[in-house]
Image 1 (cartoon, rainbow, N blue to C red):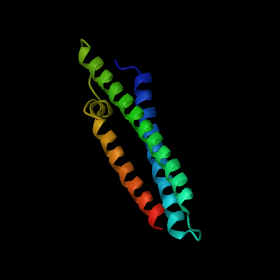
Image 2 (cartoon, helix red, strand yellow):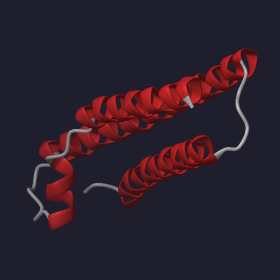
Image 3 (cartoon, one colour):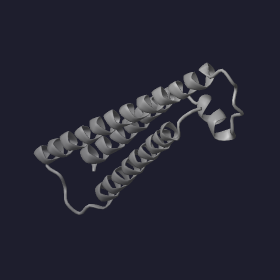
Length: 129
């Protein structure tokens, strides 16, 4: 039977992914709000520094999403393999059936796309605000 520890790891990885999403939305909302309502104007060098720091943030978030979703996908495949190798077919509850059918690779691409849209929005706000 699938170890409770493995299932706990799956849920912890999902919680980590949700935390990263919350961080992405929170930081981007704060930056967009600040850039839309700011009273100061950024000069050329300040814009470059702001964009460098923001792009570093986007890169780190992209790495975090990649790591989390790849690990999550691997552990789901391992659970699926363990369940198919068992001699007796245990009754699967709804959670395990759901996990066995999950593929997290599209989540990585969605995260990249959404991060690219946020980066575009912030770039436009920094250079045209």
